[in-house]
Image (cartoon, rainbow, N blue to C red; front, side, top):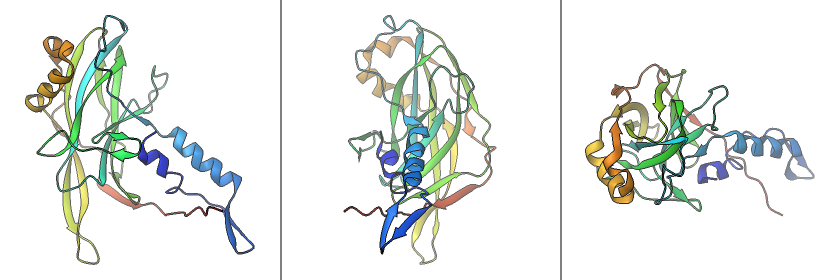
Amino acid sequence: MSKLDEVRLIFCYSSPIKIQGGKRNMSHKSIFICLLAIFLTACAVSNVDRDFSLENNPDEGIVIVSVSFDRAGSRNFQAMFYLDEGIPGAPVPPRRLEALPEYATIRMGSQFKDSYGQVLAISLPAGRHTISSWRLVRNAGYILSPSAKMAPLEFHVAAGKVQYIGNLHLNLAEGKNILGLTVVADASPEIRDRQDRDLPIIKKKYPQFADRTEIKLLPLGTWGGGGEAIREIQPIVIVPVK
């Protein structure tokens, strides 16, 4: 479970909260709702093991993709793209492609100098897959997300094949808040071809994929159709510890 999922116990809509005898107690219903939100949220995708072999996994293929966001943000932010969300009868549950890896609730650094992000090598069952939406999250519950449903980005995985589908990037725009401080005020997704940067990283980590990677890019350019980005600040619920 990632750090974002864990803090949903705190940053969640937990009404009703019962106040009894001057003490604030979270009802069983509230706790259930919070836990349900965690388990229904897509899990983050992990890289395959360094010694992964397609010969030992004949029904799967490898997808190489990078996820990133502008340096206007910081490591307090996390960019997410949603994989196989809302596909009826999908062979795998929906998952998140994240820009910065997290281990033991600690967000790690970037693999890139020009942006925050990482390259992923993931295994998927052969067949149709989609990337359906995006989100930019900052610590303390600040979220940017599309205001309307996105047109899904579709790609197909062939068993025994390795393919690079591109770089999923969030362009960030800065603005001023009511205090006059510079903040990240907007985000827009773009699909880029960064094989020049991404594939050498994969070649070093997964030499077994180096000579068999095919380039099958998603449609390049701005990923539109999601309307204007909306900003949301989730309320903070403090759960007292006795």
